[in-house]
Image (tube, rainbow, N blue to C red; front, side, top):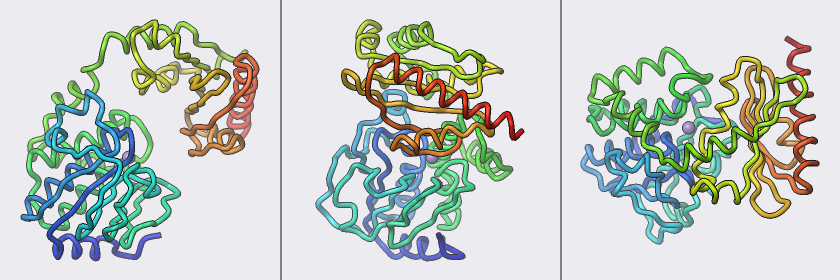
Length: 326
Ligand SMILES: [Mn+2]
């Protein structure tokens, strides 16, 4: 865990250094981009040389955000910097970028199970988004919030909370979002750009996957399945199903959702989501995967109908257990 005031040594290191590299996880989401680029803009405001490196090109709905076109896409860095600031990664390997550890690594994250791989580690599991931590650090550095920093912090909070929907929402979350708006973040532009810039293929694919949704006998567990043929038919890719798993949870009675993705014939990646006390994390862990109570993932292989039936039964048991202890 972190020292009593993990920000002091981090702020000192950032003030003292001159050249910085910032990174975050593969297949970046709004929090990865938002927390990372907020730090890049803050370091530049201090007169430092700073840029972001990521293993993957950000999705189209993230590309209009300020500074995204300046992100270096690479799976390795050769140089050493005064620090490598890694946002949002429970392990250094999550970056997908080799060589960050040529530099002293500053590890800033809000995920449980962070391995404290940095020379400085600031892990705050109470933060609704890593962007909250970026805000706190920027404040600590004495950097006034620019519209670019504010936009990225708001993006991070909006997306990591599922549009102010999930747990970990605290008065601090709203205070930071409010400060970001006051500093020039435009909530409507950010939401429209992130959520309403999708493709027609995405809508068609959601339709096809939802049309094949199955429920358990109690109607409290939903199962979605996607195959490469379905993606091809809709003209999309598996990336177009980002967020789809949460949609069945909008049904009042549905407590858990399983999403089976065929990654090779007879091989499946399974994502699991649940509401409240229903613990689907235990199912994933029992099958070699990981995650926590309400969000997890694992793999499975075999005949599709057999895998579907087995996981549907496991999720129904998890819902029963949660109902029994409620
Ligand atoms: Mn996050």
